[in-house]
Image 1: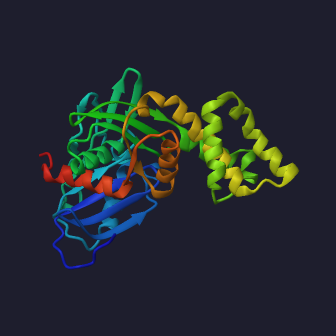
Image 2: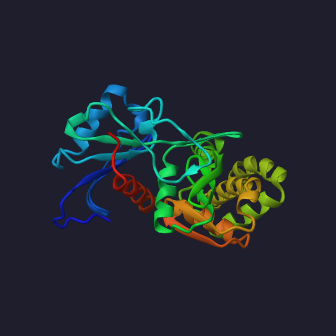
Image 3: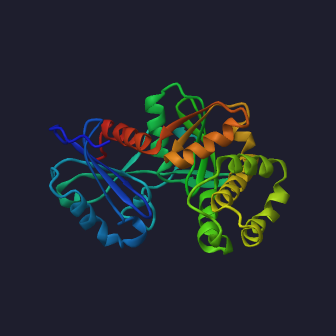
Amino acid sequence: MTDHTDHRINWIAADWGTTNLRVWAMAGARIVDSRRSDQGMGVLRPGDFAAVLADMTQGWPAAVPVIACGMVGSRQGWVEAPYVPVPCPATPRLVRVPGDPGGRAVSIVCGVRQDSPADVMRGEETQIAGLLARKPDFDGIACLPGTHTKWVRISAGEICNFKTFMTGELFGLLAGQSVLRHSVGDDTDMPGFDAAVSDAMARPAAGYAGLFQIRAEMLLTGLDPALARARLSGTLIGWELAAARPWWLGCDVTVIGADGLSDLYARALQAQGVPVSILPAQDATLTGLFTAFAQGTPA
């Protein structure tokens, strides 16, 4: 993705999450250089952000603005970028970091809130702006799988409402910290995944009891770790699809996320007869940040 040709850098994009920081030196919509760090919001104090950004952007022009999204704008982040209530335009709203740290104008994209039922997003709103910049007439559902998967209803250029599922976090806890950590492998058996999704949607109660069965079958019959992973992932995603049925039934869905996870969600949805397209997370994020840059930074 990185383009090392000699383009003039005129802004810097930053995706600053809880765990990681990614920055891109940009010439308009084109990537000139990129860097990555594990200096996410979760390991930083409020006074650390300016120094981390300066270190990450060393050698890039000092005077160009920075547009950042993600948990850097949370209450525990650098500067709180308040939530915008739905329904709201999908155009990013920015908050300026005081003092122009390092000689740069640093702005952070605001999150989005839903008061009833209560829900919030921070970071995904930028990807939705990227989706609409690429498809201005999009009217349908965006599914953004990750630690906390979002299902977002979009119409007339607005975020109408949304719902969050903790599927990714539950998978991480069960696969990494529960008794199932001894059973779950790194690869996924795809036919096993398909069967687990189908079973979870048809018989959710039986699927719940089946979680420990994964461990028991590993001990008693030597269950393949790839099949164990498929059954855990398929069960959790199947439960999510069953609960999110009002969001995808009869709709076109665009999945925005990392390749492997997006492929699993697309596969599960297509098995239900849902028309699905995939937009890579980085493409959506950078397009959304470019949209924010193009509209100008706040004074």
